[in-house]
Image (cartoon, rainbow, N blue to C red):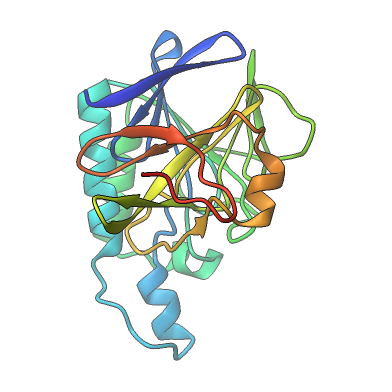
Length: 226
């Protein structure tokens, strides 16, 4: 299992290359911002279309992470669906796929700003979930400790061997972790954006996802790390 281990509030966690977070002591897998049904929502609203394959791709990667970790608890940190209508419009085969992934597991949907209420799928629906010493919620709150959140879709741009490299990334400091977006068609907010620079402490790390994980001091405004 390719990942970067770190500790938050005494909990030993692993940032996986896929963008999922694994907590071995709880056998818990956490993913954020799946945005399932984004292609359907864009088509419904008359926006430029996207190939309608993102839900299957996202679920395939999630299934692989569950197979690799054997997680018995799954927490989806909000914006699991691009909106409530997109959740309702999922093809039956994809609803059955989600049900298969849920079977035999505790599954928690945390409410996000795109999906603020329950959807007609299995699992529990919560505004946030405390699992001491951690708390799981969609949007980070200043002054919190032991917080796992998503929402911002953080990514990092690095200067590497004369080229600019951009990847989704975990942002980690002694108070919190902000997860990258897990969904296939999600964009992102660079770590040097003011909102992320303000939320994260000066010692924050960025853990880049992709073919392999790579940790670096979190790039801030005006910096590109070699």
